[in-house]
Length: 214
Image (cartoon, rainbow, N blue to C red; front, side, top):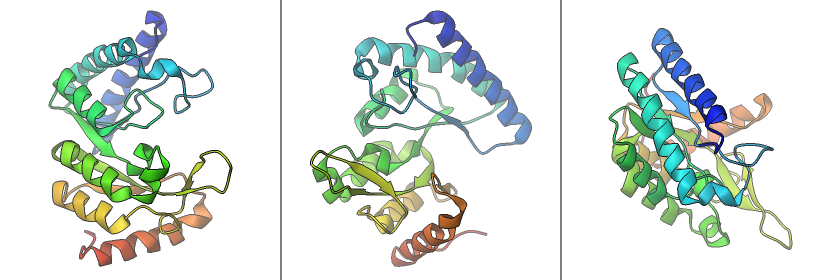
């Protein structure tokens, strides 16, 4: 989605190569970031991330990648974020419709779509919107949590599952309903905190009446 066609081409070819590696590794999915224009990092804010022309370039790039993924028999799982070009569930739905490829699916990471104080206080609304619009195209999930930081401006912090406000039971229950064979990945934590996160996710699954496949 970079406005420099040469750099964008490099990114497209790199992701196409990952599709070939995904086939060789028999990967369940190949993960796709939407990218961004902030030179300090793809997950950082930039006004151009939300411009129509940026969205159009993302569509074009993904169509090129999907052609290779289809030939390789690989499923792509794209993720969104409020700071990225895919800043809402509707925006992701618009992208999937525009690319119109059966190999392009969605990785649900609800914390990435928590963008306001009200969202933090009412995560059920965000969760239900994501699953209502994208549940049929969801193939994987990221388990995280969020809370508001104590500061005079808005700071939405990512925290260990169970330490924040995300309705983990609803997150897992709706994921299981739309993607019973999918996997849930705990991410962004140091190794020492992973056991605590796993315990919280397992408790949430139990509350939701779910059992894990082994």
